[in-house]
Length: 289
Image 1 (cartoon, rainbow, N blue to C red):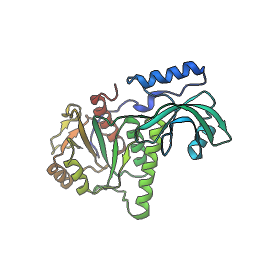
Image 2: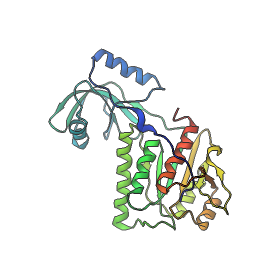
Image 3: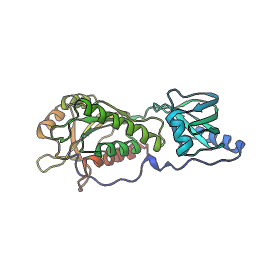
């Protein structure tokens, strides 16, 4: 398993609900203020498009349009955010809802881009059993992780092979997308293909801070809360399976420059350890302030 730790509070998911209908002049001014104020966060519901449009009108249709009209039941005057999930986004106002799956959006005044974070956090997640992997992806996305790497650790019960592996990876990527929308992010985490221990070691060797969540009596570990974070660069964090990271894997990771860290006295499941650890790091980078 990834190691001991403590629970964390809500992350990006706690940004609030989108506004209702209101006067056009006040609404436009409010949008400009939100764009200008970097300390503010977006509160309008997020929908994914292939390319972020800029112009007087745009029709959101297909599954996203259906979700906006039939599930969210958005109506004229409400704000929405359109994003490609890769950092580009634009805010507009609903002009009309047509049928069950067409939302006409107007006043898409400009396309903005959220910059890459100074400290990029990647979580290497050993494959949990059942749907716990999707739970891990969901909560890590909500917390603010930048990339997720599935890892076929030696002690994983779950095996990603053939069609089953492809289906599982697709579920992880779909979960990251939906959770990114729900938590109102405009830059969704990348979910890589499943990696071997050797491939994970290569990833760790390139990191500015390489962390393996691990704690046992025979392996000294340091507190993650005081790990030396880079001001800029990448952090790669490895979360082991329920059976723990094997001694052989620890040796390979140590050779790549990784060090063992712990969260606290309590022991977390592999599906929650990554979220807790990411929260510790993100709070220290200032991205939660």
